Length: 150
Image (cartoon, rainbow, N blue to C red; front, side, top):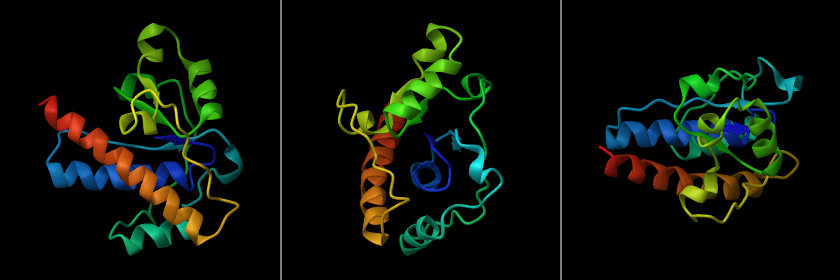
């Protein structure tokens, strides 16, 4: 799960996906990262922590990390939140195998839409709630797809 600062969208997506991995008993792992080093080593935004806790998921222990080329080796799927993240991840891709792993997270729920997850950082709690709802829908679709592949 990849976003800009790895303090809002991607840790929320990671937390939701971890919950679904547990709920569905999937043999999978998930991680999240970002591209802007400004928040390197920081925990998620307090509003992201709060909306996730309201929904029974604790992401407070997450630590921001940067995307790295090795993520292509460690993960089968790399989900991005918007066009900027897509372009940034693709710059790190070494070959077609790497590029095929990258997709917009909302394509899991709305195939081929390339819809974005808006950044709630400059908004208020309602923006974080909206982000949560979108990510919940997308991660549910990912989890259901992974159960079909077992």
